[in-house]
Length: 136
Image (cartoon, rainbow, N blue to C red; front, side, top):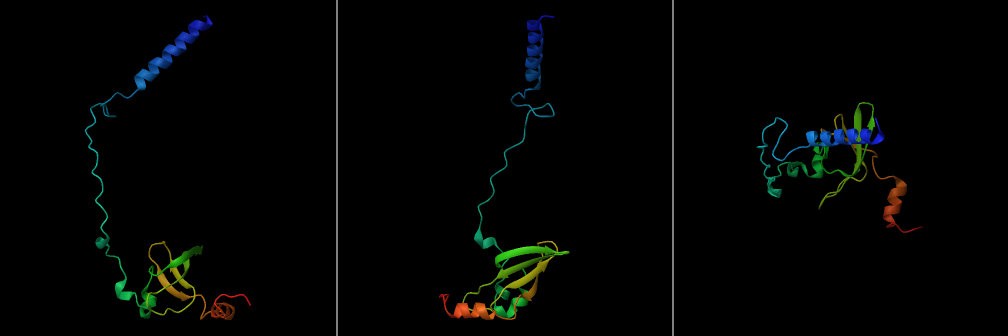
């Protein structure tokens, strides 16, 4: 068979394949017409709908109950079966024990409060803060 005949046979098969495999408007995989409706847009977010607050335990007196709350600047690392979260803290209008807090979790969802990394500020850090960060 001459090269041009082969070319036309291959080109014809490609065209037939494209036409046979093309999706016509209004068709669905089952062969009928597509009857699915476009889902409505989600409702606007309402800040007042949030019920997961920790107002009742926000005081530093309840620090052992904070769990996932009051986590600032977190760093998470897995050791064995547990994930450990190390974080700083802040409290508005209250004095919070200084230092790095520790929490642990097996699933990254449910967290339990462990305590602090240090029993207080390390002497060098305390001296630096007391000097207001000025170089000595």
